[in-house]
Length: 371
Image (cartoon, rainbow, N blue to C red; front, side, top):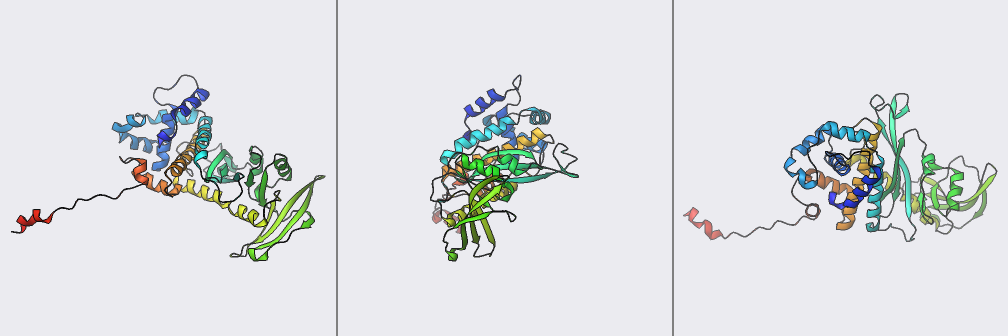
């Protein structure tokens, strides 16, 4: 798994983020390797993870590690720049993206989902992550690439940071489509996206005030109820958008979608928003299989390093999934690798097990035993 990340990537980032004299005991790559090991083995603390590595000290040399004191690792997590691990995540996405399969829609435009997830923290242990009076928390803002369902960008902020504030910092490519929920509603930002050639799909707020400009025919048998062109006026500026009404035929739940894409069919717009659920499944996968909900360090820097290591590890497994083409999900790969991490089998042998060959033993060899 470590060999999937080229050595020159670590060397380039180390030269960019080096701080003073290089450490002889623990380099950036060794720090990432140990933190990845803690994630995959679901260790509860740094001490528990280092004890597991010490049990295989005869093999540490072959994976580029050596015995490290807990204080050395804790000091590195609290003092080394977390930007190194954030940039490592970005480099891993650049390597993984060409191997990812396309999304399930006919159009060729890039499709992204934008959302965030909150991680609750104990305020007494993490005083820097203040959220409410007696509660702390972090928020992971993620842009999910639907080509392969992999995270394309992620940033970590305090839980009280509003989603729309971070959304304005994302630089989306022209011609792409981004889908998000109503928490990101900002008509000025919608105008900026349109000026950059970026299309969006979201849900219309219930208290939205708009003027109807035109109607398009729809097929009620598919669940579509309306396809309107509307005009929203805000602070003296007007914005022409498309409103689509839809009823889920199974749950009978009503939806009103808002978009600046006028060429796609109304059913395609509804399907795009339905595919937004992929980012919710992504958050569920990393919380269930990686050490995201609890932390082995209490400083802000240590928490950021642990989160970006988890995201990089997710991309590493996704890349292996794309290369082997065996139909495994990333969650299934986690379940296979975790109990076999310290074994002798290669990653390919774990994901592609071969039936055991048994030789037929002639029965006449055992005839003297019955005489």
